[in-house]
Image (cartoon, rainbow, N blue to C red; front, top):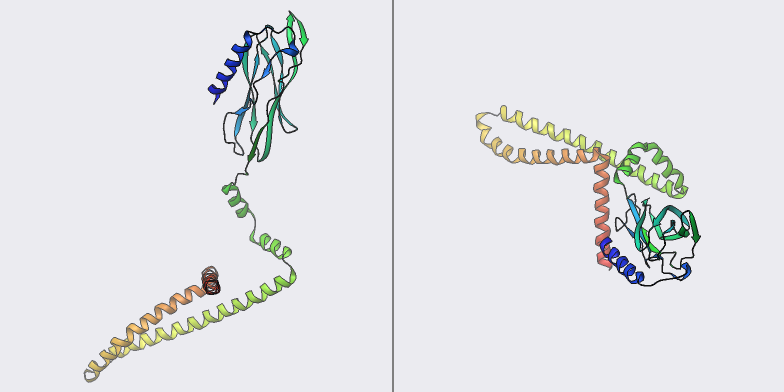
Length: 272
């Protein structure tokens, strides 16, 4: 992009060199129209970039002045320049990109021609302002900072904030529902553990009966145990799994939420 703009500037310089202007206010000294670009594009929040522009001087005299860069009405920086006759110069400043809407442009101030050694003449430059370059920079999401903030914030503080911001009628309903679910979960957990212990005792009884079988009853008991033991083992497995789910709040409420979601989606599909 820089080479393209430089070619445009060079072409303009060569065309203006053939014209002799007696007065500064009639010259074409100044910016190339629309002459703003960046060392990196597109812009991202936090980038350290350079904002560039070109000033050219087709006059026979040396031109000096200051280019001031603005973002809307905010001063971003300024750079003094001295450009000899028939040349152009790349003027730039450093800028840290911030999030938001930006309208960036450059303006020449304090422009003057060198008349003789130590003597200057102030000049009005027609092209003393670039076109405005508009950009919208999105806010960068930093996952590390989010994680750090969450880790550094005590859970009790988060609960306190949620409690303070929630209307009382809603918080009472949520609390009563939560208490009911917790009571249900704890009750199911106790019942499941009790049933699991009963199944374990039954399996032990089956094993003891096998050891104490007489020869006359061996065949009959073997057949009964062959059917009963696998069923009891399967029952014990599922009871152990169910007890594990009930003992963990995270797992229990995750599964409960998934079931509610599936039920609601099924109802939605039936209606719509």
